[in-house]
Length: 416
Image (cartoon, rainbow, N blue to C red):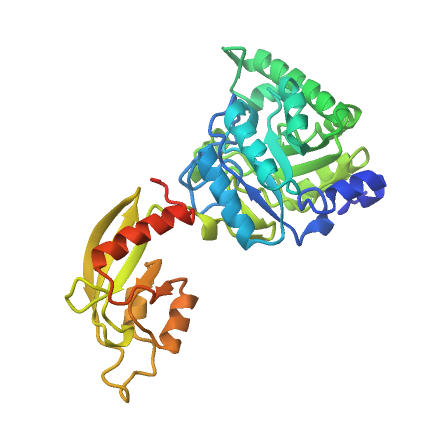
């Protein structure tokens, strides 16, 4: 049997309505964007396939983020992304640890987002260890979509996956650890389903460990109220530093995944379009824009000048630029950069891109008194804002006003 690519034929009209704008629950909702806010660094279990590497900006896999956020930073990120992505429909907390191992940050973030934007769908991802005790809180916060990672219901299999589980202030290991985790996962799943949440189960397929266990697992998940099953391939690259990666545990083939989905689909609807997103993912499932929305550690400005302490230079006549970084409410002088002038009189402007544009592409904003339409367009394409609003104003005053503006506009700086 082929796995179902869409779950529509297995769901009633009410459920279809609830998932029609959630891209993870419905393949037909691919035009809607989601946002993951990384406010949950701690985890209460260890998995042999996981290494929460916070500073990994060039990978797309669960458990990695570029930077952790506190609650105020998360809200700023939400409002910034929402203002730029009209199709944003879902905000979730998926780590990089476990959302419910960090309940205060998770709940404060969800509560504030719901206050700001009641129409936004909220969801979290969890391993389920602490789920049952928080179901009522999640329901009251308006969380209707919930993902639990459940890899098995056999403690002997679990002992091969989880080195330890931290529960009730004790670190459990071996069979005992997986017994506790599995029992808490199923209890949490049952409670969440009973509370009316739409529960998706993520299962990491690990050849030689749980690949022969999928049917048994799917039956139990269905019996306890799960809506959707997402079977994902093990990611075990050696450079990731996970136990399975270091020991070169094989990843499943595409055929292995399809076979597992086929077995599970007899009992449960399947999610077949998962992209195994980062914990700070932004945008469409097929077009993650997290890099575009990463928080900068500084806001860099360039000022065209002629040696005076005022903004007094036309861009086309400038061959010197002062570079400043605004960071953590401080303005720091970086360097002076020099280049050839773009214009040498009204009739002698170059038709080629001025070298100053290449010189300033690491800047966020350029200050000058005037600029031609051509260079201004090229700066715009390079994501450099051109500001001509401060002509002939004192340099010191402009720097101070710019720093204040960055704070007022919620331009997010890591040190802020």
